[in-house]
Image (cartoon, rainbow, N blue to C red; front, side, top):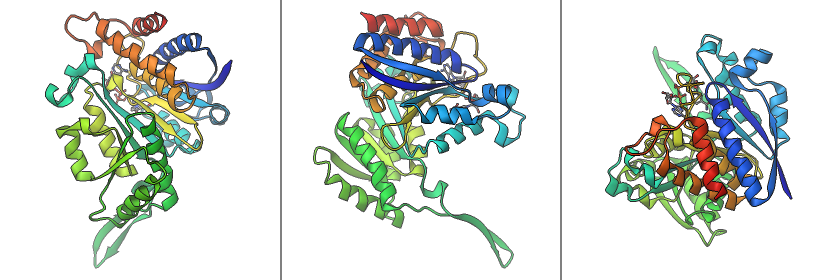
Length: 358
Ligand code: NAD
């Protein structure tokens, strides 16, 4: 039997509730497709602060490093809001991402057909459904480049530097090409090569690497045009690959096309197939413990883990289909629709499992 090990980081607020539902669903697909996942649970965020005094204990990092993948729910809450920055729950998030060397951020912008009315875009633009993957470089570029301030003749100025090396660009482009091979086979590389030298190197490098992927159709867009195209004609995109800063902005724009934060999954990958998978939303302390949280972003994050780290593509696809089917018969309050009953967090997990078992 195929066996995998996964570290679970429930965190705070709605985190433990939604993670329970994802485990329920994973148990269903393990039975259905004949593989086994062994779980370790570790502390992060406010839960870790309460227990150990720090948001990211060393044992948590060790547990994650010795697993095939990590499922993280969410961290943060009112209780810890007055602590100094380095001791707040969110410091645990930044810490784990850097400790695990996660350099590729994957943000699917997806509209399931039953939810097409929740998109802020007109239905003729969305069509029946939408499925874009934004691949963002996560550890380089202007957010990590040289920066500073200087004063000359009494005038203060500040600068930040965008710098990318060929290996950094090759590494992220390779991720995008390989993901496109598992999807629609198209990659759009986004840069600002009409102005920036770093973008010109980006584009040259991506074009050169594309020779190794003759099955992929590669196109290029300037970032300003891409921002427009995402709302004008989002269906033209399959995989978008871009730098850290452009990806930060474009992935938020693309994901909001789906119109619902409770549906957005994400993955961050490092070398090999290791990855950390988490919903885009936070710990929603306003609804924690009330059974109102939408567990689908967490469940879809688990599906991404099956696809990209555990290579259980069929199980991943079956979860995505089950989520689509579940949305036709039930909704959590955040995505309530006419004529569809409202259900609790755990009922939504049960419905997805029931569909998977049929
Ligand atoms: P949030 O995403 O937690 O909540 C924003 C709004 O969306 C709230 O009204 C919430 O009820 C709703 N919401 C979020 N997820 C939902 C879900 N699954 N189902 C139904 N409704 C959902 O963002 P926030 O309120 O700005 O932050 C709350 C806490 O979460 C803060 O402490 C913040 O620092 C933290 N946070 C953590 C992460 C993370 O763990 N990755 C990300 C963002 C914010």
